[in-house]
Image (cartoon, rainbow, N blue to C red):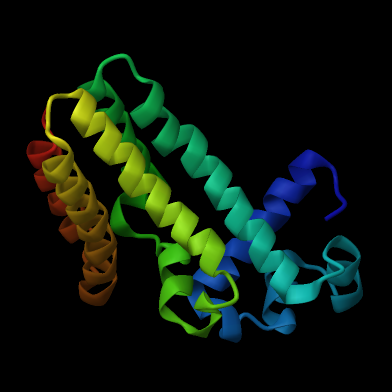
Length: 185
């Protein structure tokens, strides 16, 4: 992709929202063009690899955000409890308190899964591994930490689905509150 940083950030964000709302298959170039204000020619200028490159760039953008805001606090925070708290706060912020679909999770559930399997596994695998490591530093043994980390990420993803199904973001807020209590180190 060729664009200045600010323009690229806006473009990627708009494309991400189309993928969130429509899934990979439903995110046609026409819909992406409508969301970005760009014609197909301009889209191909920014993304010569077409829709697949757009999705890969969006996934890379999400991965970078999660690395900085979710995984790094889990890994780098001197106090594991503080890192876990920062992870939950960032998760709440990113998913807009349950009002925003997890694009990586959506891709994991549709036909695009095989196309982006490496990125999807890395996202979820990193989240579980970093959370488990923080829990272990906080005193939990490895089997318990692994299970709790996996259960927490699953609960977050499930709460996003239920929040959307019920059109009630309080479902997500309650799930995060329960996760916060279970993860107390």
